[in-house]
Image (tube, rainbow, N blue to C red; front, side, top):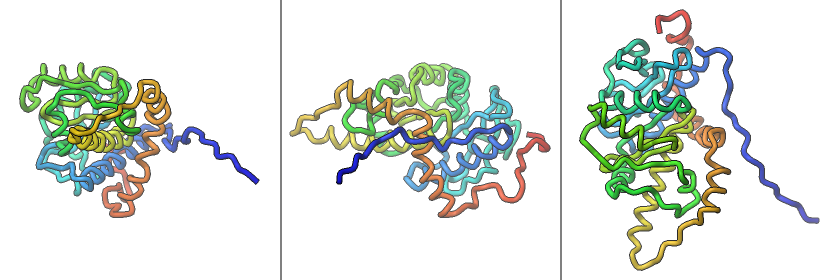
Length: 273
């Protein structure tokens, strides 16, 4: 007796919300989990690195991590709400990374479809970025960035100038990610879950690219455009990438759930946020 194995697209576990304040609570908790996930993989480096999420209550504003808070210690209640002019208007009301605000504010303005963006100074992302070229389609994972990532080739120092942040947003274009030459990687998503797992995949893909490039006595065999597009279409949709992060979120809750809101939600409709 034979059996047939069929494959279907993974069902999305991404929730839908009728209450924007419940959505705010959800996204802040998942953002805190993303920071814990980043720390577990060694992406923290001093005060560098930031994750932002668009606020569902007031979409012209976004939440970002406070300056100087270690990724391993991040809690949902630590997040800071800022407006498009950089004013701290809610949440933890702590000072934020000026360069982080410059980068994320322009992306959120330029891309209404982007609800989250991640940037950190991860080691392989920094190493590969110095070549100033896109990733090659060398593995299944790299195909998640097929025709969906750009390269910003004009590093001008710490991003404190509006021109620099505008150029980063232009290099991102309509893609999911951008390699910042001499700097590292930045990923985006319709959810923070999508942006976070893409950052992880891009970091691993950068590592694999560097290893492949180091094998100078062998010829690399890139994936064909047809196969790369097929893989991208099958795996790189927002629902699948959201689902991809959920085991990591569950593990962070299992490790230590102190990043979650307990008992009451301080940034609800009765608060001043």
